Image 1 (cartoon, helix red, strand yellow):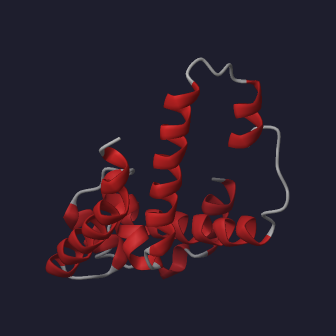
Image 2: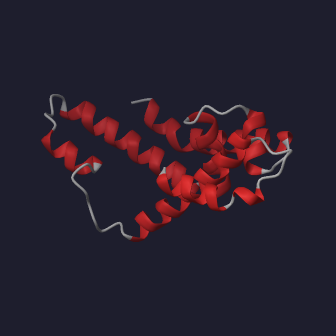
Image 3: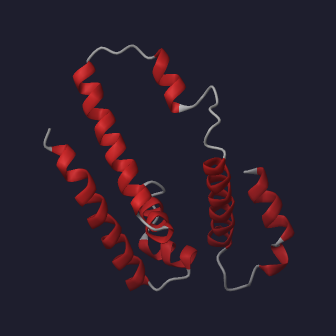
Length: 137
């Protein structure tokens, strides 16, 4: 968040009058987050104490079969997301996780509204193909 605010302050002179401030700021935050993800991916050998795998070690395992199914589904979702190109992953994350409206996504990405809808539809289809085999079990 600090990096986003710092960049926004230094780039404030680039803000156009017709641009919505929240959309402009979200775009900067998106770029900062993508840079951090790329950096973390390159440092993937390091694990922090709050990492998912470390916290899972201390969690009690009541139902090994259910845990195995959840793990398979989690892996399928990760495979599906990583198989998407960066643009599809971004619009899907904005729609599903950030709960942004189509128009907001269009403003953030700079795409037309129909293109946003098409790309979200494509991303959902690809994710569905990856996850569906794991939902029957």
